[in-house]
Amino acid sequence: MNFRTELEPLDLAKTLGCGQTFRWRMLPDGSWRGPLDDQLVVLKKSPGSKLHISAEPGREDAARLVKEHLRAGDDIARIQRSLRSRDPVLRKGMGGLKGLRIVKMDEWECLVSFVLATYANIPRISLMIETLSKKYGEPIAGGVNRFPSRARLARAGESELRACGLGYRAPYVRAIAQDLTDDRLESMKDLDFEELRDALKELPGVGDKVADCVALFGFGRLEAFPIDVWMERALARLYHKRGSYTRLREFASERFSQYAGYAQEYLYYNERSHAAKGPCLFSEE
DNA sequence: GCCCAGGAGTGTG
DNA sequence: CACACTCATGGG
Image (cartoon, chains in turn cyan, yellow, orange):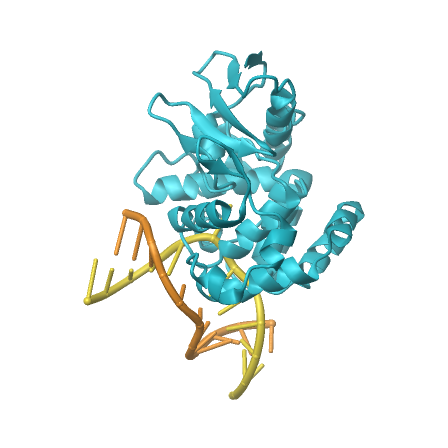
């Protein structure tokens, strides 16, 4: 089953391969395959052409899931205008990243994924999530399984989870799966941003950074600005800003305001690209 | 082998 | 408030 959809601007490699989300894989022909909800989807797009979506037969809702995941409603031009007017660092090279979109993940999957992401690199995070999904998730297609449900992970033992390579993260995942009810997770959608951060931070294994990632990529709060080691480097190098998480977060909030999440993704992508001796789009203020 | 990783929790000054 | 230390383990 095939669809063509207008969704611009969009760069699949930048969006799906940069560490916001961990289950998409690039196939040899340059298309991207990943699980969305209960189905396996393949996306293909060359610059200047429409997005091509391949889904399983009879799944007319695949296009809707893809558009939701890629936040088709975000007006990227408007977001970049807002950031450009606020920040001289982003003002110049941001156009080169206009295809980098924030994704919208399932809240539960996002929460567990970023608890696992603490002090691990992206390939390892992907490995942990694939191992968990293979062991506890329902098969979808092509040997790919759904992300495990909360109820299923609640029944997993700590040693079982450690055997999936989670290390010291195993008890966190187990405790969250057992203690966080579906209703409580659902009710978090109604909280305002600061309340949501506080509610997430009550969970074991969730601190400032994980809470901001879950608020941004799971709950779609574009004002969130997660700060990891790469962002600390970017803020020090480009803005000469250092200090505690709270201090850096307040700087970002004042500087970038309602679209801080997009600013964060641009700076994060740029900093990693810079470290890999790739193109560097931004220079100091 | 070595260093690092989209950090958090706990204890101490 | 700021640091220091520990926590497992696969990738580069």
